[in-house]
Image (cartoon, rainbow, N blue to C red; front, side, top):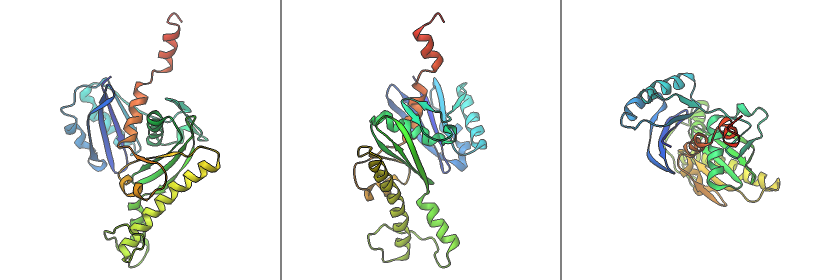
Length: 255
């Protein structure tokens, strides 16, 4: 099955063409330049399905739909459900969970089939707990490193944003800000690992995705794996899962 999967986030719209277990092409455009997708997709063969996780709002949804018209396929916009692709959702209202988080959880489960802390590190950072039975226990949302730096620059006199580097013992203000942001994010991940262990879950694998994954991963303890485009991986699994109607028909085609 030839699938165009799209992850529309606050900063970037990532996309990939998947077929027979491998990615044939991948790319991205800045969310503020979503109109460039038509040009980016000009040479893509017509897919069998177009599927998207969109957290960037209604205007971006319309832009995605317009760009995909060339394929004469509707865009399937994913929403979270109570259960899908082997993952069960423990949110009080399952549909309130962001589509990108849901797809990332499904991607992580189908790649590893074991307990995971699933981290999407973009403009915001989500840290979600998935147990060994495929149950999403819950998670947290943290401002990303860029938002932390911007907040300090806006709200604190004399702290203008300057490039900094992570250090154990920062000796420059820019490095202190960068190190504080990275440590805050790494601390959120490690506390979720601790919470899962205290809840009796076996030591989880931390699965990291997103643009900030490379700065967080080296600061974490325990088993860590960086997975490029985890949301896209989950979207492919969702696209490939037979619908309930299809499963029913295959069991008893006469009903």
